[in-house]
Image (spheres, rainbow, N blue to C red):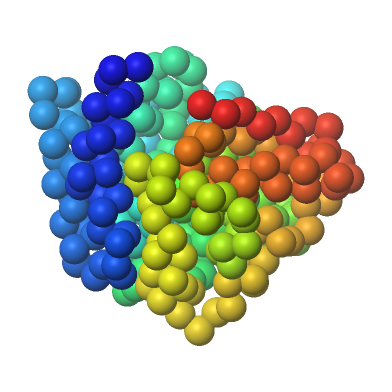
Length: 269
């Protein structure tokens, strides 16, 4: 409890206060990079193997020769515009050790240099590339954190529309699934969230979406059709402004046909 309190306090001082206004991308990237490096002090760096899947540069962690037996594809967070590389590699390394299977990190293209839907295109290409390489869909689990969780769900929906088989499951952590900011917690948890504030929404519209409406189902997958999606596991904190995105997602999945209805789960941490 003490460690969590200290971490939350540090995040509020280094990242949360930036959302009091609309920060520039340069400021956000510098802040994320500094926090990423600070968190890596005293920790062993995780070895990654660079590769290309579906025409997209990726990073393998763990025994990639076992990919056909099972692989976890992880999509990083960072507001669609940043990548906390060292943190995500440590998380991927931990997952690979626990699972005994390889983890595939996808450094998708970032906004604003590559706005919507460039990052999503990369994630979809990697998933299709794994299938083309002979990895069984049922042996793939897609996970995503924050912006990566948005991209993970949108990837599932696009795969279904393209006639591709669904992966074995999906895990969405702190998922911004409705970029219209219609979820009540976007306002009610504004003072509690240690990472994000209400200005995160107009920032995302400007930096990531550009001319695209935030209610586009590829941008706000909560508003799309979930019929036939894979089982989905949702993780979110009770203090996040994203809390009700996950609550609404659990309700939406339960009301949909197919596997998502039978297996949607919702956890608070």
